[in-house]
Image 1 (spheres, rainbow, N blue to C red):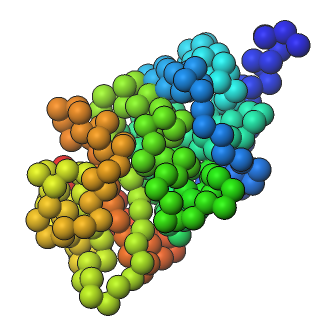
Image 2 (cartoon, rainbow, N blue to C red; image 1 turned 180 degrees about the vertical axis):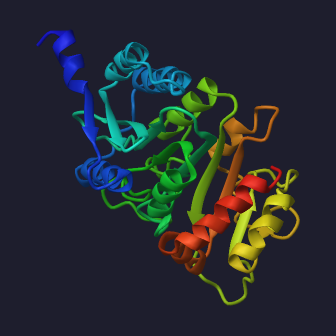
Length: 296
């Protein structure tokens, strides 16, 4: 098969007849269903990072020739780009084309967009976070959204949560394709801010429904916590109000905090907070309004 023919297969164009949200869910389900973790090669990480850098740089117009050029780089690491259209909404979905090795799924909005990237790195473990990220992306007009596709504790046979190393826990692995994608998007658009969603189990002695962190105890996002408090009832800033659930070992936080401007927020949500965000459009509206107005 010639490379040009292969490229033609990798660039798809489809219409999300059931809506953008349903199309994104179907894409994630398809990749997730047969994903088997394989740690990526260095060349794959480089191609994924550079391809997403190029793709997000042209997202304002999604010019066909420029998207095609960026997709050539992604194809080198076995990634496909599908153009999904739902009314006036136009999204490029970047997914594994052949071997589903747990790289995750990335969607990038074409045209004008809020400079936000929603991330659900534990969508198979922190219940509802994958649904929340998808719905917030669709409803907020954000630039991008990302999900993992292999359970954080199921990369290896017999793996248990207490093991010291978890290859598929992409928040702890600088060498993951999820992390390469984060760096690629951040490099391609320096205005982007990353909002990473997590969940924790309910505890009667823990008064917070949400804990927000920059990943650095010396930089507590107090204004964001104050803005979120009316949405959930209680919200605390890691470093002042709360001394745990701060994501201080999160590799995306470490990479993004190297920029001079604030670019990363780690949001831990209680089970009740996650259910309300996933199920209630009014709660999501209040949540988005709070984020839009709060100073990072």
